Image (cartoon, rainbow, N blue to C red; front, side, top):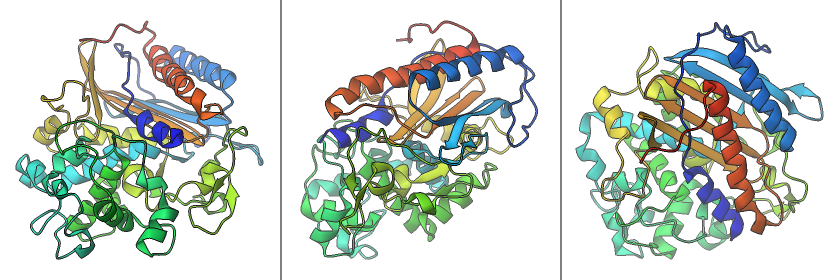
Length: 428
């Protein structure tokens, strides 16, 4: 199915370009203002955002840029809520989609930090697994015995064996609930039980990279079992609050349920209505009917601001005053799988090296309602941008090329604006 193909592939597309400059740090922002001591930087970023919002039909966006843990620029553009003409500001919250994956990965590394690196090779399922049969009897005796070979590292690096087809169980919650004889929408735990009992792996564990939302669903349950707390609470305590992030939450499905200061999402009007994930038979825009964020929690359920994401990234790699992880854990997080040259994933992040600088990044989208991108560089620069529409056309057959073009415009264009330097060829 084309829609699930877009959902799976979009966050895995690699970042291109480089940042190679220094500019003056600015003070904190007033709630609805943009401030920067480097006016040239502000003008470049504003011009690029104006070009993006002029070319693509996106109502609103927010950006945050920092250097060595200090914000240098933040601003909102356009409107967060069209109907009330509510402006987007630096404090506007957005669904961050798959940028949730590095958040989940950092929580896992924090929980297992005293057991690393050996814990990465621990098996996930089985009597002695990280999700043991005694605690999760519905996971025991999987249909495909190869499941018992899946390790924690496999889940973090998308090599567990799922994802080689277009089927994504995280968006099939009504049918899964029907099969499992539970109330729709199926829960995260229901989805795991369904996949283990009803379907086989696509490829053997540890042999191929295939981007997998479902694998990060499993990581969320590992966080719950290891911490003894619900996923959202555990991640807030382990990651967000120590990083200085107070308002990130797992989002709600419907527009009327959205958080205070959260943007509204606007599907491209050419896209058809979809059935509600609650199984009730109603239809509506995919942004508010096609997702159940509680089931998507660990792979795509969070709502946060661009500044929240920058604070998280800086704390995760030790750039901020509060470091979430030990230096040796950060080094492990950035390490790619040497046996898979084409797998550019570390532990939760896309890892690239360009113009001599190591870069961590991740993007995320929910068709067609939101898009976000986060980048953190080893030289201290970090930035995030969030939009309340992903502007890809209908029919879906045209979507992949347009999606690539949009991502290039966001990632390359904004990086060039931030550093005021032409985009070099990626390093080998």
